Amino acid sequence: MDINNNLPIGFAMGMAMRGDALEAYSRLTEAEKEEIINQCRDAKSKAEMDRIISRLSGNWF
Image (cartoon, rainbow, N blue to C red; front, side, top):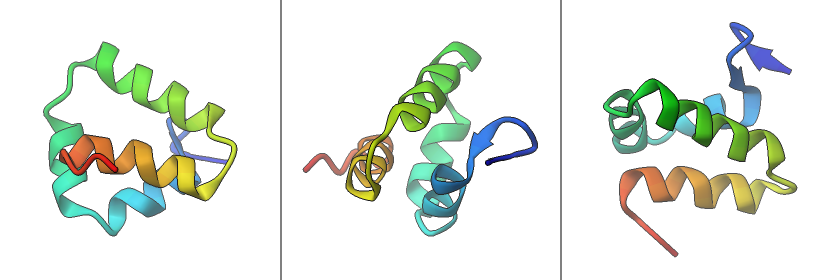
């Protein structure tokens, strides 16, 4: 399910808990945002989604 037909729900929920990642996402170009959204749609687990969100905030692990 997507919120506003744009963000996958898991991504939106994860971003709501990570202000730093949300701020970084807001600075991306539209093409970069679309790439992140596509990665989120392809994520197979919560851990994978968490890694995508962590990359946005610069916290790679």
